[in-house]
Image (cartoon, rainbow, N blue to C red; front, top):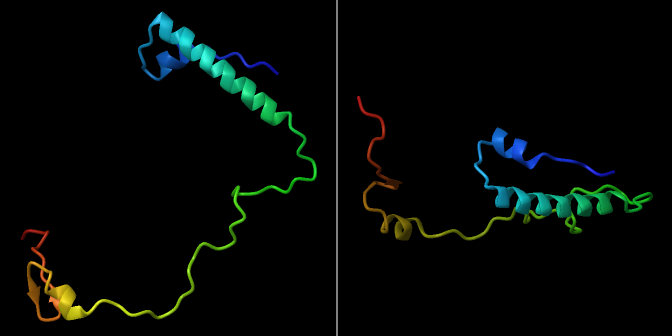
Length: 95
């Protein structure tokens, strides 16, 4: 099913200034895209299960296991300012 799209109208609605050469160029590109979409729509998909992802990924999360962390004193030694076991940051709300 051919689809006609008025590129000049779309450009005008999007407030994009296109020259006549640009309009012709984008019309050709859009036609190629629409033809490809029509070919994809024409593919036989009966018996094909819908999928949300093209790769056979089930779960990308790692297991929830306790692992060693960085040493607190070593991390705090890199802070520009600290107060006891905490980072000290400048206030972001003024009175």
